[in-house]
Length: 239
Length: 234
Image (cartoon, rainbow over all chains, first blue to last red; front, side):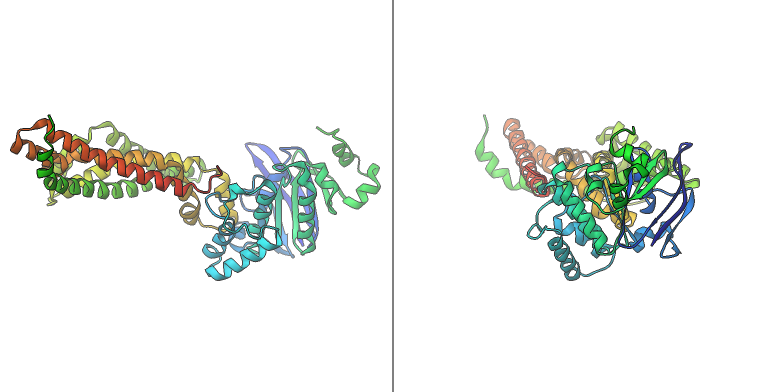
């Protein structure tokens, strides 16, 4: 279980994250919903040690996470909005490089892991292709495969549908749902209502660095009036 | 006008000079590339340290940046001819060293080249998307690993055409080694001229050999560029 308590982050005297409290269980998807600039991505970046929080604690299974060690312990993985795949490497090398150079696995072990992941994410036969030869959806699946290769417990996806054709939203939602089914703790930062509608998840609406309303997706679907702020956001009435 | 028989007769002499020219160019290219990469990394990393507000390290970052900028300004702002002469006739004796004119020329040209190459590579490094470094960091790569496996390969690919120009310039500039007594292609041309008194034939032959060397290098750089950029979608 991931438990975030009283997390704060300030940039140039502006509070980007303001006392964030959030609990996400194993196999659960937490969607951080909100407009651009409300702090969704910053929260994911703090979890991935790309930013440092001013105050607050992050607990995983009751133990405090040392944010400075996150990249070395591979507890958290990140799928970036623009994927940030290594363009100069092949599809397979995008996965094997970290396995070999960071985790110290042999070429053979790394290739086996990469081949398994590529097959699971529908990229079989594309091992020797370069990133620029993949479609948007394929790039995203490769970014997910690259993240999962390091066996993180928490997978963060930053705006997973923003760089994709709207038609791919269902595929992306299925992939994210699959991650949760496999037991990962999944955090998704998104403002895409179409994605939200296709996920079974917990919804956290963020405004000005704070979580202002939360709901379970099933509950929200049936009792929209109980969640006025999320309803307004979904209806496009919150700027 | 041009006496081809003379060219054929003196070709072995000129080719011997051409080999020395290639020797100077290759060695100074190696020095320039190594030094230039280190300078570029020093400059980009010191800028990052400065921008990251890392307390005490911040002034160290600034100092390193100023030192590198000063070095580049001096090297780029003075003629290579003066640098070769200064290095061979002033610095080497002042340090009490004994270095052959050939190696003095290689070092001086290498130092000069490092300043230019550093700026080429720096532009490549700064044009690598910041997201690449973030992805590397999230995947657990150390700073050195990120530079070695992610940043430099992409930066070098982007600057291959400019690096090619620098290498071609090196071949041509190596002729300045003649001024401290290195017997390279141009010096062999001077010898041929003294023996034949045929200026037109001599310098046509010398120019043609330089042209062949730079054309072959240009072709090789094009092949390398195509090979290294095969990941870019047509």
